[in-house]
Image (cartoon, rainbow, N blue to C red):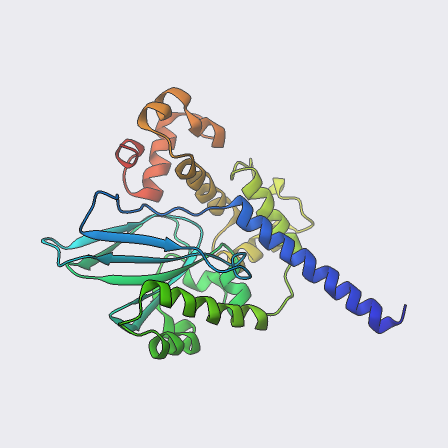
Length: 288
C-alpha cells in the first residue's frame, strides 16, 4: 500500500475512534438541571434535543422564560452538571454569556420578566469546538464576547426577538454543524478513555490512580483542567451527584433503598452535605 494511502487509512481510523468516544460520552451521561414543575403556570422551562450529527457534542438547547410579569422576582438555581453552557437574553441577544464548570450550585436573580435561551455542551466538548481551555471559565459566568467574540457577534446579529424557540434551535443546529465540520480532529484518546471510565463507574473511584489509561497523574490533571475545567476528583463528585438526580428517587426510596451507597457514600450525613453543595437544598427538599 502506498505511504499516502496508509496515512489516509490511519487518519480515518483515528477519526472513527474519536467519534466512538464522543458517542460513549452521550450514551453514558445525561446532565440534569431542575425543571420548573408542570403545574407552575407562570414560568416555562423547555429543552430541545439537537439534530443528528451534533448530538455527540450538544446535550440540548433550552429555554427558561416567564409567561407573564411575575409578582415577585424569580431566582433560578443552576446545579452542578459538569457542562459548559452558552446562553443569551432572547429579548436582547447582545446580552450573551458563557458559564463554565461549577463546583457548587449557582443562583441567578432574573427579576419579574425574563426569556433566556441556551446551549448545553456535553462535558469536554467546548474546548474541542472552540480551542478554549475550560479552566478559564470555571466557577463563573462571563460575557461571551470576552471568550468567543465571533460567536457572540453571530448570536447578536442572527437571533431575533420574534424568532420562536423552535426557529432558534434550527439556527443553532445549522451554526454548530458548521463549527463541528471545521474543528480539529486531534483528540487525546487517553483522556477520553479516562472520562469514559469515570462515567461507566458513576464517578466511584477510590483515587485518580484508578484512571490508568497511559497518562501520568500530572498529565491527567492537566488534560482534565483543559477539557473540563476541574480535577478528576471534582468531576467524579459531580458525576455521582448527577447519577442520583437521574435515578429520580423519592424521599421514601432514599430512606429505604439508600441508593447513595451505590455511588460511594458511606453514611447519610456525608451524602446530604455533598448533595446540598451541588444543589443548594437538601435531598428531602429536592425530591419532595
